[in-house]
Length: 189
Image (cartoon, rainbow, N blue to C red; front, side, top):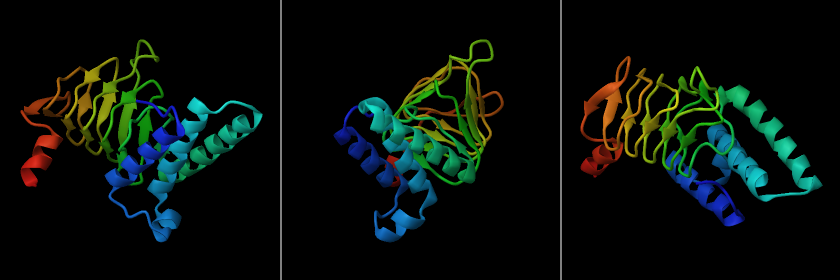
């Protein structure tokens, strides 16, 4: 899913702030660095996908530069149009994502994660479903597909495809559980 209208942009922003679990008050608008980064990312996506014309191109260039500057400060290298709504970046720290990767809605991603391209073809990158949890230090690369509701453990090296509704971990990653993060979350409620 991509931002294709102003209402889509507002929807993505609402889902992101809900996933980050922060209150949209004045203090957080000024001081929450990760939320500031995500707002700029979504606004850039809106301008790239929806706006045309000279002024829009200038705004797009400004947003790209601003996002890159803030990304360097936080350690993020996250290109536009990769994540669906409900992105939750858990902490500031190194996160590198290939621009050809596609990640569904409600993804929680932690520090030191790398989502990279296939070594043989830099245009082929992972496709990750919705409601996924990516633990700290996970490395996910290649022309692979990860299903919906998959938990990826800390420091996992994922180089092959996995179906929905499981937990994977290890080097190389393998299935370690028959339930995903949404199953765990529902059992806690």
